[in-house]
Image (cartoon, rainbow, N blue to C red; front, side, top):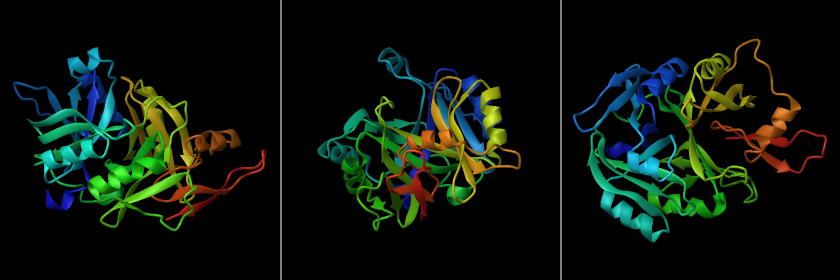
Length: 300
C-alpha cells in the first residue's frame, strides 16, 4: 500500500441491481465478475485479466431513503485514515461515512468543500495499483472532477493528498486543470456547467474499440450521453450512463468507419469546459468567431 498513497487505489459501483450491473459491465468493458460476498454483505469483484479493478455493492437502504442514486466512487489511498478525516473537516469538506472497517479495508466516504463525493481507503485487501498504469486494458485511464469552481477546489486536494498542477505554465483562465500524483498526470478538473446538477467525479474505463463499446452500452440498456468524440492524439471518448443510472465514461481507439463528430458535436463537447480529456488536453486559448470551431491545441 505504501506506493499507492495519494493515488486512486479502488473503484466501487453502488447500484440498485448487482446482477444486472455486473452483466452490463462485463459486456461493455470486458471485466470478469466474481462473487466475493460475506454473510454480512453481498459484494462482487471486477477483474481485468490478473488485475483487480474494483467492486460492486448494493446501494445501502439508508442512502436510498435519503435520495442517493447509483454512482461510481473512487477510493484514494491514505496511510492514516483518522488524521485524513480530521484534515478534511479542517479544509471545509465533510465526512459522510466515518472511518469504518469493511471487506476491502478501512474506508471513509467524504465530500470536498463543493460537495463532490469520493472515498478514502487504508489497508486495501484487494490487489495493488494497476501495474499497467493509465493505459492498462479495461482499467481506469482517467479521473475527471466536474467542480462547482475548479480554481477554488484545487487547493483542497493539493493540501489533502499532495496533488500538483500538471500544466502550471498555462494561463489561470484556462478551463481545464490537469493534476498529477508523484509526477504522473492522472486526471483533470473543470468547472461544471449549471446544467450539471451536482459536482462529481467521472471515471474513464479503457476499451479497445470505442465504437463497438458504445454500441454495447446502448444494446445493454445503458445510454451514450456524449460522443464518440475524437481527441487530437486519435483517442476517442464517450460519456455514458449504465442501466441503473450511474455515470461513467469510456476511452479508446476508434475503428475505420466510425463517424467523426459533426461541428455541433464539437460545440456540444465544449459544453464540458471546452475540453476533451485523456492525458492530452484540448484547451481553448482564444475566443472563436460564432461560426468557427473552438481555437484549441493539445497540452501535455
